[in-house]
Length: 242
Ligand SMILES: *Cc1c(COP(=O)(O)O)cnc(C)c1O
Image (cartoon, rainbow, N blue to C red; front, side, top):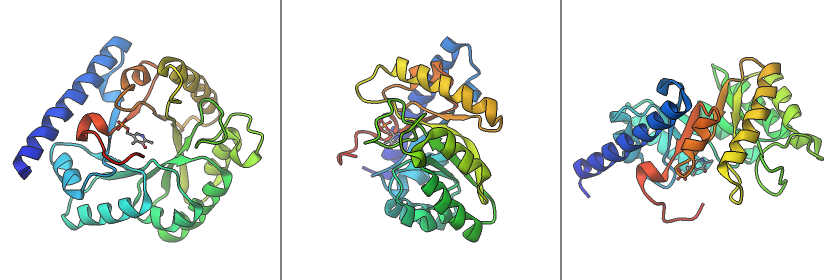
């Protein structure tokens, strides 16, 4: 595919995604400017990030450290600036790498990970790192996300939020969640909204709600998402499973 053809394709799908967000906001009586788009570019090349930035996309999401480090460097080398959101499972030993290129880490789900990011951010960054606490909506400890009332203190949602809020080098921005596969998104995002309201009453600055992907952005917007993370609907089907 030529660069021009790829650009046209991305422009068309971006337009469609903006229309979906606009319709969802209208249906929910919300201002369309209150929902930010994060383009999830995992498995797609740096050239797509550059094209998306040229089309007005300001925020990009990645879920693997190695891929994100290389891609963000390649994009920056072309003098293109976007905000990088890390949205994947993160090992503590990758904290030092992630804080060097990420603007936001959306997937903090343990006090230990918060600690590792805090140490790295305080040492390696000039500005604080924005952090969202990833919430497990169904409370399944086998998957990612902090859990309200977790058996394991390290994974307890309220403790993780407090740890981020108190940590040097980090700023608690809000929450991120993925609707569990076997749940109605409607119910998942309603539960998330209840948890978010409780979190905000304690931390008024934690206003971000990153929820909604290609398949369920409408339900997420209806329940208050401030960020939607869109991969497939923008860039096409990924051929690797992740
Ligand atoms: C891949 C991914 C997305 C994007 O999913 P799509 O269904 O392709 O829109 C959003 N959030 C996270 C955490 C992801 O890993």
